Each structure stands twice: as structure tokens, then as C-alpha cells.
Length: 342
Ligand SMILES: *[C@@H]1O[C@H](CO)[C@@H](O)[C@H](O)[C@H]1NC(C)=O
Ligand SMILES: *[C@@H]1O[C@H](CO)[C@@H](O)[C@H](O)[C@H]1NC(C)=O
Ligand SMILES: *[C@@H]1O[C@H](CO)[C@@H](O)[C@H](O)[C@H]1NC(C)=O
Ligand SMILES: *[C@@H]1O[C@H](CO)[C@@H](O)[C@H](O)[C@H]1NC(C)=O
Ligand SMILES: *[C@@H]1O[C@H](CO)[C@@H](O)[C@H](O)[C@H]1NC(C)=O
Ligand SMILES: *[C@@H]1O[C@H](CO)[C@@H](O)[C@H](O)[C@H]1NC(C)=O
Image 1: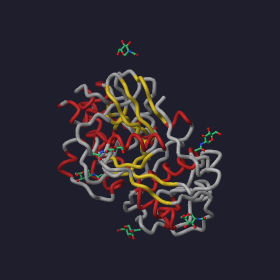
Image 2 (image 1 turned 120 degrees about the horizontal axis):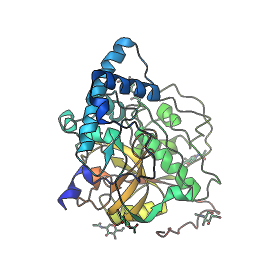
Image 3 (image 1 turned 180 degrees about the vertical axis):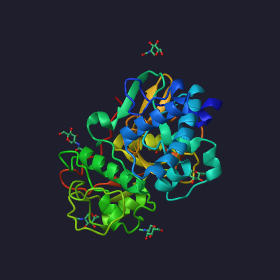
Image 4 (image 1 turned 90 degrees about the vertical axis):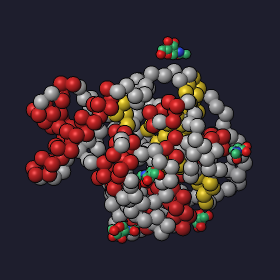
């Protein structure tokens, strides 16, 4: 019981899934030169903008992070941290970029958030049964919101894309525009923070979403561009909060937008989309889709322990769940079925 109270209880990664992050060895840490080599490798993999002065500063931050990750991994937690694109950012920078600055620095320094930032890889487990919308072809490839606090838009759009496909409103799984929400948002605040619920409200207010390719993502708030909605929703429904059963039933119907707090507090966090769950011999978990690219977690996803004793769920995942509804039409108004666990 005590074990599952901690963030450590997050269950992660199949070894079959190859991590895209760089592996750190003892030798990499030995000398300044070996650290520099690792840094150069990281720069080559992830790229870095900025001048030489900036690069020198980044190297200092990078070294700290590498040491932190290595120490953490040596402690034998149930998940590993990996060196990904956030390798040369400080915690504060990471949090400010994605959370609109609402952070508790003292708490973050204790490690939770840096863990969230580098989540990666692997724990040995045996999957027995899963309900996974990805396996039904109902979930798009992972997107990357980059430095812009618009997780609400990404979470909402992912839920809408999947819902419209599952309800047969769209024949294929569309990729829809987050940028439309970032630029035009009324209830949301561009890159300064947004919730999934506010984003659903904006989608209704804007008369629907256009295609991703017609209104591509730029990673910053821009001026409003004209758009032609191709996908619409009728509104938003809330799942009963802090109720694991209600959440599970909701996920069986469609992916659900929820909140993930990287420092595992409960009040606020950033928005993610839960696309399924698994029961395993080692414990049960939610399959959580993030929008920080594929080098975060396991190809952009994490598995979060769903046997968490607090009703708010691990890292607050059950505190504020919501989902979009579709417009009933003669063809789709009888879609009251739910899917059984496979
Ligand atoms: C579960 O994993 C263990 C080793 O970790 C293995 O011995 C066992 O056969 C696995 N069970 C199933 C059902 O896959
Ligand atoms: C969507 O279409 C598929 C294939 O025709 C069908 O199996 C499924 O029940 C439909 N779903 C809804 C919600 O109508
Ligand atoms: C976001 O914050 C910036 C800087 O404070 C401000 O200039 C901008 O107007 C804000 N945007 C929105 C949509 O609130
Ligand atoms: C989309 O749905 C909303 C809510 O039902 C409605 O107000 C809006 O007019 C719809 N947009 C289009 C283009 O039909
Ligand atoms: C949780 O949700 C389930 C399913 O909707 C419901 O039966 C149950 O009463 C709820 N529990 C609480 C404590 O509200
Ligand atoms: C996580 O929760 C803590 C405590 O409730 C809060 O201070 C912090 O701002 C939250 N993190 C994010 C990213 O919102």
C-alpha cells in the first residue's frame, strides 16, 4: 500500500517499445570531456538554437540534469528517466513553458516535476487485458505542443478527433487544428494556459474545427486566420470527478480529457487525454496520451497506476475529466453502445 502512494507507482513502458531518448552510462559522467561528448550527441539529436554563450550556459544545465537522471535511475525505481528534448532546460523553464507559470518551485525541487519531465522506459510487467483505443485505430500519432501552454487545446482536440471517428461521424481519423484554438480562443488564453473544458467550449463557439493541415500548429499565438470548420461537436460533458469507476466507464466510450500534474499535486496540472487502461499482474494502469512529442515517456504516452488509494487518482488524473459530445444525426443517434473490455 505504501508503495503505491508515491509517484514511483507510475507503471511505465514495455521493454518492447524502444525508447527514443539517449542512454546515459557511468562513463559518460566520468570527465568533463565525456560529458561534453554526450552534450554534443544530444545537440545533434535534438538540435539547439542559440549562440555559443547560450550553449555554454545550456551545457551547465545539461550536466546537472544528466547527473540527476543517472542518480535517479540507479535507485531502482519502477520507471526510468530518459534524456529527451528537455535535457538542457531547468525545471523552472520547463514548468513556465507548459504550465503558464503556476508552479510551486520548492516542491518541484524535490524531484517530482523533473521526473515528469524525463519520464521514460520500462518496468517488467505482464499485460493481461487492455482496453486501448489506439489498437482500434482511433488515436492519432503523438503531437508536440512545444513551448506553448496550450495543453488544453491538444487534449481537447485529441478527444474530439477520436470521438468523431468512434461515432462514425468522420470516416477516417482526422487530424484537427489546435492552432485555430490558440489563435481564436475566447475561453482559453492562447499559450498562457487553457483547460480542455474551455477548449471544448471554444470549439462550439467557433463553429467547429478545421483540419490540422489547413491551419497548422506554430507553437505560438498568432493573429486569427480564416478557417473552414470540417468537424464539430455539440458540447462538453463532465465525468463524475474522483470516481475511478465512472472514469473507466467513460474511457470505454471514448478517450477522455483529464489532468496530469507533473509534480503529482492535485489542484491543477496540464491537460492530457486518457485513451485506455490495462489490467496486469503487476498492477493496473491508465494509458495517458501527452502532447510533448514522442521522446517523452513511452513514445509520448505514460502508463499511470490506476490502483491509487486517493480517489483523485495518481497525480490528480481523476480530478477533472471531461469529453466532447457529438451532434446527433439520424445516422449516429443510436450510438448508445459501450465497448466491452477485450
Ligand atoms: C510474467 O513475467 C514473469 C517474469 O517477469 C514470467 O516468468 C511469467 O511467465 C509472465 N507471465 C505471463 C502470464 O506472461
Ligand atoms: C461505426 O461503424 C462500424 C463499422 O461499420 C460499426 O461496427 C460501429 O458499430 C459503428 N459505430 C457507431 C457508433 O455507429
Ligand atoms: C499571454 O500573455 C502575454 C504576456 O503576458 C500577453 O501579452 C498576451 O496578451 C496573453 N495572451 C492571452 C490570450 O491572454
Ligand atoms: C457546431 O456546433 C455548434 C453547437 O451545436 C453550433 O453552434 C455551430 O453552429 C455548429 N457549426 C457548424 C458549422 O455547423
Ligand atoms: C461512481 O460512479 C459509479 C458509476 O457511475 C456510480 O455507480 C457510483 O455511485 C459513483 N460513486 C460515487 C462515490 O459517487
Ligand atoms: C501541481 O500541483 C501542485 C500542488 O497542488 C501545484 O502547486 C502545481 O501548480 C501543480 N502543477 C501544475 C503544472 O499545475
